[in-house]
Image 1 (cartoon, rainbow, N blue to C red):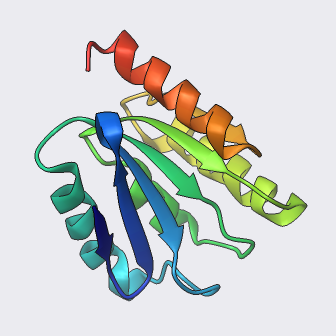
Image 2 (image 1 turned 180 degrees about the vertical axis):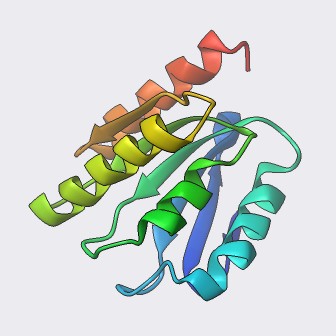
Length: 129
């Protein structure tokens, strides 16, 4: 099943893995954060979920990273990077999670989508989901 907002396309995979892809290169604005989070919650269908996030090659404000990292139903996050710039953004996201989020959600960078999904499946299994 797929869900869309102005900025995101969310695909629900088996075992409640939510794949988030920016629809535009300048995605993730302050104005759309609540719409994106509401659609993510709808896609999770009131269940615990793991997220696979395609990290864009653009700077994302720390306040947005903090807001996206503070979702209580997400139990782990795989960040899919495809360039040096997206790797920098992914590392910034991880540092925000470690600094500001009281729940230490397992988060890891990947360059291979298949490996990222396998890691997320293992994280879900650890939680009995």
